[in-house]
Amino acid sequence: MAFIDHNRPRNPRMSTKRIVVLGAGPAGVAVAIGLRRAGEEVLLVGEPRRFAAVEGVSARVLGALHKAGFARAVRCFAPPSQRCVTWDGTHSRANWESLVDRQAFDRAALEDARSVGVSVVTGRIVSCASAVNGHHVEVDHDGRRTTFAADFIVEARGRAAPGQGSARVRGAETVSLLQYWVGPPATAGSAVESCADGWVWMAALADGRRYLQLTLDVATAALPPKRELGAFCRARFDTLETARPFLEGAEPVGEPHARTSTPVLQEEVAGHDWLRVGDAAMAVDPLSGNGIFQALSSALQAPAVIGTLLHDPDRAALARRFHQERIENLFFHFARIGRDFHAQESRWPDEPFWRTRRAWPDAQPIHPGTAPDDLQVTRRPVVSDGRIVEDDVVVTPDQPLGIWHVDGVRLAPLVRALHACGSQTSAEAVLRAELGGDATRAARVAAWMREQGWLAGEPREIP
Image (cartoon, rainbow, N blue to C red; front, side):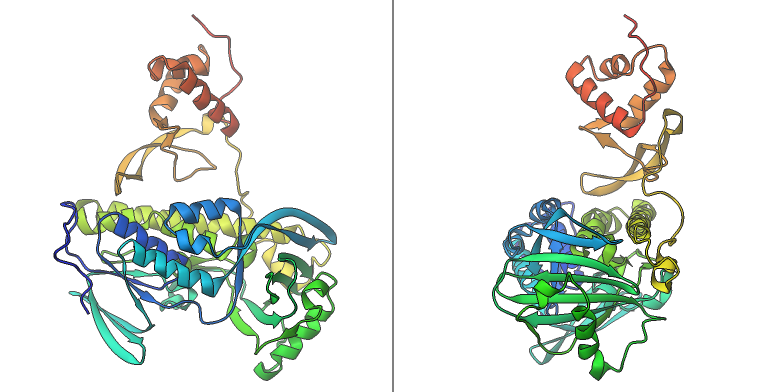
């Protein structure tokens, strides 16, 4: 099956390199849409999630999805509803989220990909063999097997992607048991509750579908045989006060679906003709944020990396470094969020589940404090005009990869100017001079710098 339209006018910056994206989840679709928008020809191979599941996202994530091209998929989300959290014995309803049927989301996302010109083959990926001259992907679709050749592979099959044994960092082994229930129509909503050996997430859609997920420590969970998992989950849910509204009038459908939720960071996430994104590159436990958000976080800049690898080989090493560093930075950021959330539960400090997770991966704060003396200007890879290039950025303890622009203004020259003037002139005077006398923009940048801790006490302004 050919997927390159040779009659379509091409962007002169592009080539006829054949790109195949493996996996039809949020990460794979985001990369495919981004590549197509950049003028590349892309084949996306995969299928919607096979088991029933629900996820929730914030309004910010919905906006990011829409901007990334998921127009149809965004319409699958329910209106925002409150999440009830019972943690450390305290009840709260501070957060709102929009729930979505992941299978419906995945189907709509594939339509979004097709709508921008991505070639889509819906089917099960049987194998992907790589050699010096490229890759060959075998796909089973509608009972027929087809092999596709590719010059470049994007691995986006999530945790199921081959190569999990090469993980560089792996957290405590964790398993999540998801049970699907059906009951009468009810108000949509979700809840989280901690328990001595783990925690439970619950979600209800307005049409009566309910999803209850129990997350446990693999080593100490003492799970029963597979045929008894359904009864095991139901017995656990029955003991939780928070679960009662989700169980009322409802009955489980089928058997629970068990899946790993162990944090994993792959050793290598980029090569000269392949790239890992989403959970195939790094996956953290569900407490650290929802899967859709994490998938987007690691996938949105992948088209620039791929474009550089394919068309600017002199900067290939820089592009691989950019992707590797950002994947690692995201992994530890999400892992520390999870660590701090686990640490908030103080009732069972000696239970294995909590003892292990409240101190992993390290003791470093999520956002280290930053002082003016911490600012360093150095050269780092950045995204410019759809490619990875190297430029001066400002590195801080909180932003180890560096910040390039704010409000459309390059920060490195401003920081150099501030350092050169020392404390003799106010920051806004220095910034105003550097920005050609634009007082409004200088005030905005100065306000942002103060929020970040970049500016010391302001001296009087010298005329």
